[in-house]
Image (tube, rainbow, N blue to C red; front, side):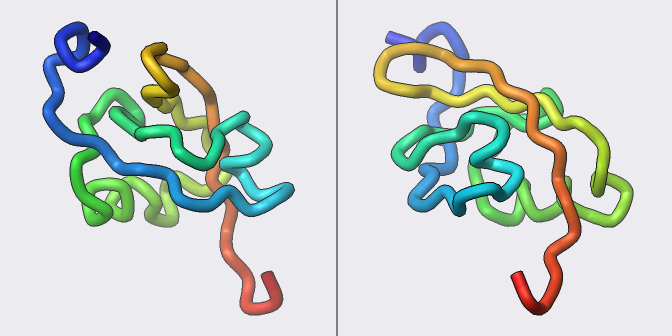
Amino acid sequence: MCWARTGQQAGLRIVEVVPNAPAARAGLRQGDLLLTAGGAPMSTAQSLQQLMLADAIGHPLALTVLRGDALVDVIATPTELHADD
């Protein structure tokens, strides 16, 4: 199983992917389990939020997700969230 290959015991379940948002453009899907972002393990929402600071906006970020029994690597480019989004 992929858990054995990654050595991780936790991840962040993707519960919604907004059309045309960075996650959707990167190919993430509802139900994927986010394991790493920028090479760092993701086990809490706070760990992901810490990566999404102003310095990350507009820069590609490597993500690894567990989709079914497969590890999938994608690149997402965070963007600023605007009040009208």
